[in-house]
Picture 1 (spheres, rainbow, N blue to C red):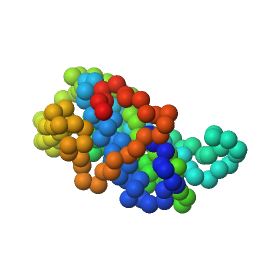
Picture 2 (spheres, helix red, strand yellow):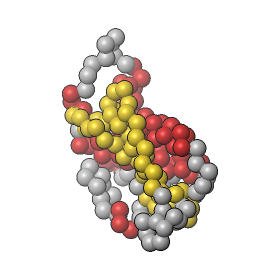
Picture 3 (cartoon, rainbow, N blue to C red):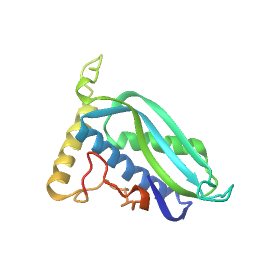
Picture 4 (cartoon, one colour):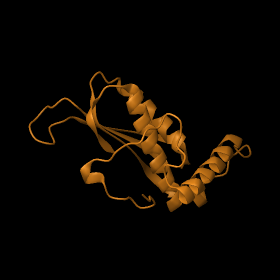
Length: 164
């Protein structure tokens, strides 16, 4: 998650942040050997309702996918749908994407009607992107539409499975 430098109303900025966060979460899932079934979207609104740092409304929404995934594009799609459902009419101070309901990537269930070609293709693409990032750094290749998201002061730590 990150707190924006200024309150954000632009859907394009929010979508870019969602994609960047989803890719980072997915990369950590793959490095740790996990898949997730639940996507979590966290939003802190810009409207202050009480004094102090906790005086801003905090929304947390989650959705469970049909199958576990470690694909950033799919995680971002689910997070965008969660944002769409909110129909926000006010700026956002903080946005975060996370996952829950983790399971081992090695124990994923086989498809009932044969291999899912799209899932296999995305899996190969994600492995190739991970290899490029390992060799040339995390910013060597990024998805179109994603933006570099700066971290807020308290969330500056390097998370497990992530390298700076």
